[in-house]
Image 1 (cartoon, rainbow, N blue to C red):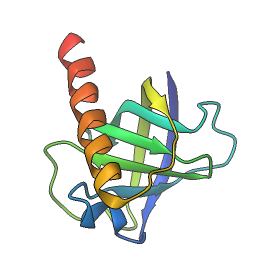
Image 2: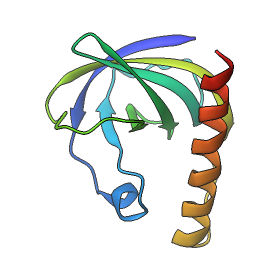
Image 3: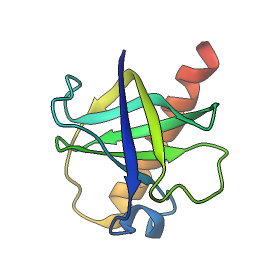
Image 4: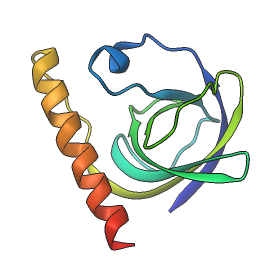
Length: 115
């Protein structure tokens, strides 16, 4: 498990168009977790939220936060990276990406149900 703190910044909103809005969290470089999809938590104002995390291999973590609505822009959050779901991969089209994200979210929820 890896923990890191970062600030939520604006993004391209592509994930939102696919039906999975994410908080884009700018973190210090040097994450030990490699690129891919992970189960993890976002901790904000003392609350812990289950999340599907995308680590693209940059200093940005994209978090699809379950059961959260609110504005996190410019807020500091803590990220707990728990378990890798799969490696990063490219998709031929938006529908393929959307289908895979839905599977990733389901797998992430299964992991949390076992905790």
